[in-house]
View 1 (cartoon, rainbow, N blue to C red):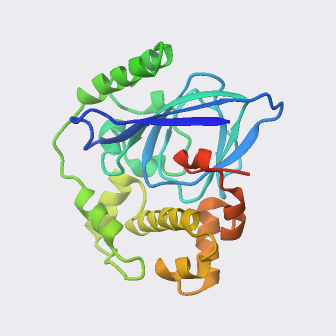
View 2 (cartoon, rainbow, N blue to C red):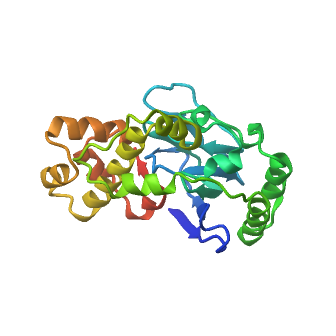
Length: 263
């Protein structure tokens, strides 16, 4: 059984951090369980307090990685997680338009890449990571995260407004993605293009609808701008590794928190 919880940041940090989260698993199974992590258009800092999961970006990567701490930047496909029977994780989920401030790097370099947190050029990151791994409990980790992140706040020209327009935009319309400056800022600050970002949002909205109305796949496809079933299935498989009908069979309500789907 996997236990997931989320915690809101302070009011000061809410414009920057979506939430903190914890994930625990205790099982007696001898073999690790393989999950698929569906990208959700956010960026996470991940701290493993017990045996780290083994992960691999799909479908284009083949080498598995296991890090005590790491960054999950944007992914253009799903991520396979191999989780041992004893797991405890603490995570910080950043808004898509703010992660670059704390990573202090070009976010395009983190897309579909395995990044150890201490490899980031962020000020004081090594000491912060060490404190987080040694902290006694979740409450202390949140305090440490609040202190570290609050000391690094800055005023900036955010892409939030543009991202919200993409979020509200009907998925069957065609927003202007050809603005060169917009493309450059998305690649630098978000890590992916506006078009890929919107496709990620669309798949996540479709997942929400499928959970509510699993028998109306054709209606859901048209609702979100897919004009033929082959396009819908192809796009869905790219981000989840499953067809919509296979996905319905895999849904476990206890594991929706991180868009985790068991293989």
